[in-house]
Amino acid sequence: MATICNVSEEKALEIKKLQFTYASADEPSLKEISMPIAKNSVTALIGPSGCGKSTLLRSINRMHDLYPGNKYEGEIIYNGRNILDAKEDLINLRINIGMIFQKPTAFPMSIMDNVAYGLKLQGIKNKTELKDRVEKALTDAAIWKEVKDRLKHDANGLSGGQQQRLCIARAIAVEPEILLFDEPTSALDPISTQGIEELVTELKEKVSIVIVTHNMQQAARVSDYTGFMYLGELIELGKTEELFVTPAEKLTEEYITGKFG
Amino acid sequence: MTKIIDNIFANSTRLIAITVLFITAWIFTVLFQESLLSMQTFGLDFVTESKWAPNLEKFGAFAAIMGSVISTFLAMVLAVPVAIGVAIFLSEIAHERLKAPVGVSIELLAAIPSVIYGMWGLFYFVPIIRDIFGGIGIGMLTAGIVLAIMILPFMAAVTRDAMNTTPDILKESAYALGGTKWDVIRDIVIPYSKAGIIGALILALGRAIGETMAVTFVMGNVHKVSWDLTQPATSIPVTLANEFTEADTDLYFSSLFELALILLVISFTIISIAKFYFLRRKRSV
Ligand SMILES: Nc1ncnc2c1ncn2[C@@H]1O[C@H](COP(=O)(O)OP(=O)(O)OP(=O)(O)O)[C@@H](O)[C@H]1O
Ligand SMILES: [Mg+2]
Image 1 (tube, rainbow over the protein chains, first blue to last red):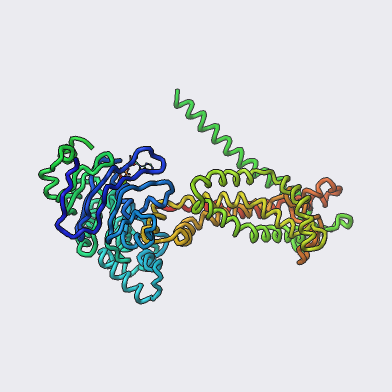
Image 2: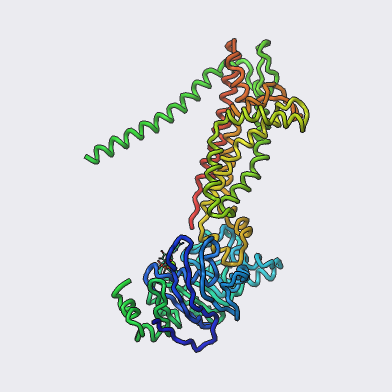
């Protein structure tokens, strides 16, 4: 019943009949979701609160595995393998599929150490290499100029928008192939939001992006593809410009015209 | 009408708060007044002399003070690593289904009256220490160990509470970068809750230093500073518990009060450092 478009680009990832059930729930929170994620593109996920956007996003880097008893069914194909397989190396998976959260999550350490954190976890100890890669990540995250003179300062001294860009720098420093954003601007002011949106569209040159957003204008501004979710199902996935203008599904149309949600 | 009730409520709670302050001040005043005689007689010698001879009317608190310091230090050295380990286990490692029952049993352990630790120590621990280390089994080492066991549950529970304040989203961010459980504990949980953990440890220290019943049974009551930890010794609360009933002269009585005043000042200082410095600071995120 869902309308899922084909993507013209190569696929970064393909979700096949994904069903996800929380440990404490009787019903699955995601129901048979199938969709491709296009490479070097931005895919936005929209839908009313509680429809399962975050749940879907957090399945892609197996974040749900941090809490016992959660159950996946179906497949997520990434680089030719099913990453829902019990044998999947989650550390390695999460290095390749990074995540940015709803609120900035600067670690209790310096700006430099924050950005170098993922690299250090991988065992990179060479000071010049760390410095170079931190500088590159901060430059790519459009925050280098603001912080280059205070790399040793506590990251919690930055503003919310700066912290969020720091988190993006931290995530791209390990050079992931996919980045997952869960409402990255919901805690930010309009100017910081605009900065993050511009950053997202620039980053797709290097990474494939999935972004969850409450804000339909944001989805329209930043994404190439948009998926509309409702009650744990993916109702429609389409090219962003088509989905917002000529939605194929009635539910999608009702949602984007503000009839509910 | 609600305004009147609000007023009554506000005023009565204020009264209770003031009463608490008043009682604290009162206790201080009483201890100070009763100590005056001893202070005037011995001056600073009271804290530097270890000769405690009631029959000669000679009182020096050095042995008792050192006893409190050494037994507490021993207890901390033994308890801190274990408590931190237990706290890490409970907040980060244990399976959800294990967290609650183990957590509750630790809180129950913390609720055991200290006199019971003392009795248990005397009948079960003293013989073990005697067999392993020699001596009579009663002494500083035994006191330190019993004290460690006594403060451990409290210390572990409060340390766990401090660690639990680490926001999930912060831990998830580190996992999302490819962190292992141990990476997250070492780099996120402990640094984030450091102030709270130190505060918890100091609170436990404050408890240990004032502890009376758990150590009275196993410390002995000998006013002598000895580096042989198997020897019987004393501490401030142990002296107070053992000797008040025997204080037959004004000076003896006053010296005990000065001991109590010293203990109160030490405890107050420790608890204040914990509360106002470490447990005050709040974090965002
Ligand atoms: N930890 C959990 N345990 C059980 N059920 C959960 C849990 N987290 C979310 N859910 C449920 O799963 C469903 C999907 O939640 P999810 O957080 O994915 O929604 P969302 O689309 O991200 O919503 P929002 O826009 O409010 O962030 C909801 O019905 C929610 O109640
Ligand atoms: Mg969400």
